Amino acid sequence: MFIEIIEAIAIATYLTRTEKQPYVRIAIRKVDTLKILLMVLWETKSLTDKKYLALSAKVEEVGKMLGGWSGQLAKQNSPDI
Image 1 (cartoon, helix red, strand yellow):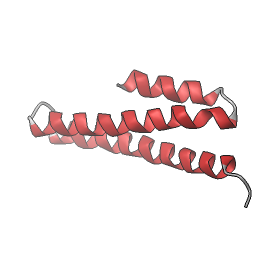
Image 2 (cartoon, helix red, strand yellow):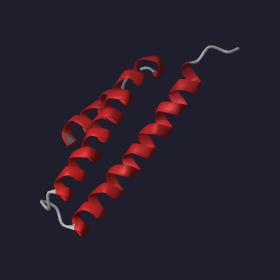
Image 3 (tube, rainbow, N blue to C red):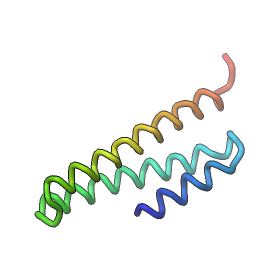
């Protein structure tokens, strides 16, 4: 899952502004999936509280960055009204 997120971000980085949005959305979707999987691991006691908190904080930070990028792309790609 981590690799798929990195791959989507890397692809989006080298595309034109109008082509980036689908890959950013994919990365956001994968981050959301990763959050759920981490929660399942924590709920089943496969991750300690400390590890869960450390990982989920970083994943949350990446999600916020991707959300900001997505919002910026939406503004840039919207037609002027």
